[in-house]
Amino acid sequence: MPVAFNLEDDFRFKDSLDSLDRAVARNTILTLLEIQEAEISWAEFVDHYQWRELPISGADTYPGANQLCSFQIVVDETGTQVEIIGFSYENLVVICSIGRIP
Image (cartoon, rainbow, N blue to C red; front, side, top):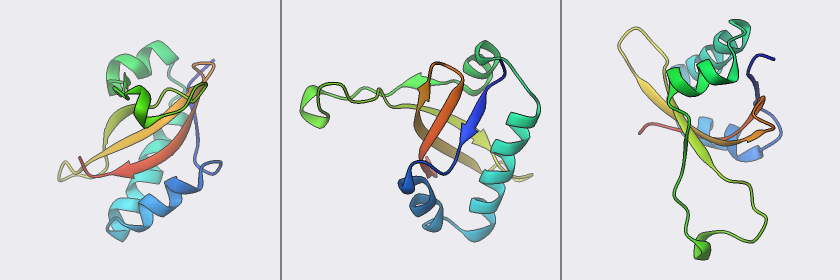
């Protein structure tokens, strides 16, 4: 199964994009959709986009919380990078939680 992105289930994602420049926010969504349309495997996604677990201490979370991870995308011709933070559902769907400039 190819990797897919859920951009709607975590309200923080839209809120975080609202804090970015309008063009960067739009290009972030378009880039994620392009990745999804490319139908790459989870292994290819992890390798190419550097999907990594975020180190979160016990005091910063709660038992049973989703392990947050991040990956980086380039969203325009000038090389603007956006870090996406979220979590995966069965290593198939990335629930996007935050988009920010690293």
